[in-house]
Length: 160
Image 1: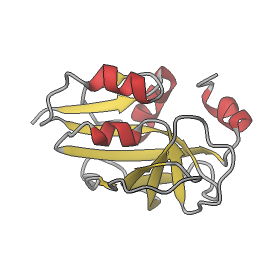
Image 2: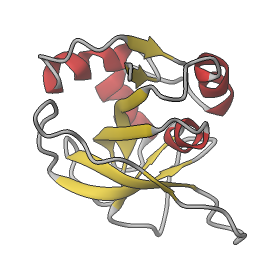
Image 3: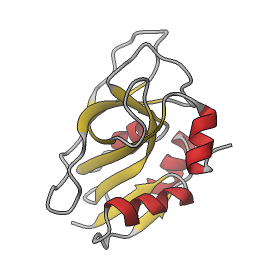
């Protein structure tokens, strides 16, 4: 089995050296959002262990909280329809840091600026990574903001 760290933006590479300093897995910078994920990962063998590390927003988690994602869903708060919940693999604690907490991640097509959902994180890539059918997907998200695009920009200098 091969291994791959997936980050959305080049600025997230600093998270690897900070939280995974001994990890020698190759890194793929995909770009933000569903289309970039699909284009970047469509030819990666499905027996690859994919670790997604990146920033995420949260309505109530403290900025800097390390979240091990246990499951991922799409974020569509205005409609309900039958769709699978995608379960993720546990982080290998011998290689990765112990997370501060575990939570669900909701992937959205745009930056989430408000939500009634609490005790979770929001991103723009993880559901699409998990839906591609890799045998093993794990995720470590670092809370960058409390649903504030301004705070996200100040911390990450990311998505415009």
